[in-house]
Amino acid sequence: MQQQVKSIFTECIQTQIAAADLLQDSLMQAAELLVNTLLSGGKVFCCGERMAHASARHFAHIMLTGLDFERPPFAVTALHADFGAREHEYTFAQQILPSGQAGDLLIVLNASATAPRVCRAMEAAVSRGMLIVALTSEADQQVAGLMGPEDVEIRIPSRNSARVSELLLQLVNMLCSLSEQQIFPQELDT
Image (cartoon, rainbow, N blue to C red; front, side, top):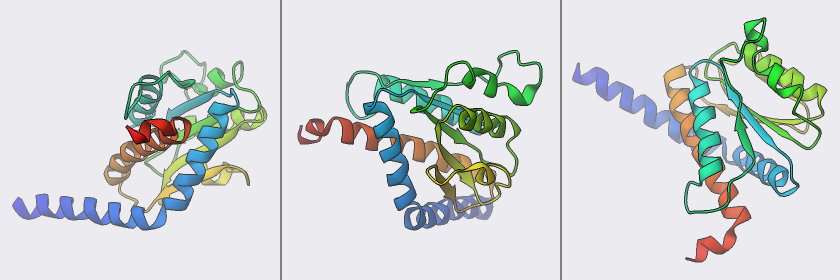
C-alpha cells in the first residue's frame, strides 16, 4: 500500500514538472486574454465538464472575492450545471446565448476525453463572437477541435483525469493571481 501511495505522489510531481516546462507560454497568453477582457469591460463566463466543473466554480469565486489580496470583484460568472435545458448537453450553451457578446470570454475546463456540454457552450460562444480559453488534457478529443486562431488552449500533459483535475485547480489559481498582479501592480510592492 505504501508503494501505491508513493507512486501516486510521484505521478503528481512528474505531471507538475512537465506542466511547468510546457504550459508557461499558453498560461501567460490566457492571463493576457483574461486581463484584456476584464479591462475592456467584457464579461467572463466559465464552466467545466463533470469533475472540472468544481474548478470552474472555484475560479469564479476567487475572481469575485480575490485570491492574493483584497480588491474589487472581477466580472466572472460560473455557468450553472443544473439549469433545466431540454437537452442536458445544452445546459451551458443556453446560458451563453442570451448573455454572451463579442468582447466577452468563455473559459472551459475538461479533465477527460469528451466534453459534450462544454463543446455546446463553445459553439454558443463562437456564435456570439466570444473568445475562448480552454484548459484540457492530453486525452481531450473534442474541445481542441473547436478552438479558433485567437483562442488559447492550455493542454495539461497527462491523460489521467485525477492528475489533470489537480492541475486544473492549480492553473485557475494561477490565472487569478496573474490577473490580479497585472490589474493591480501596486499591490506587489506591499
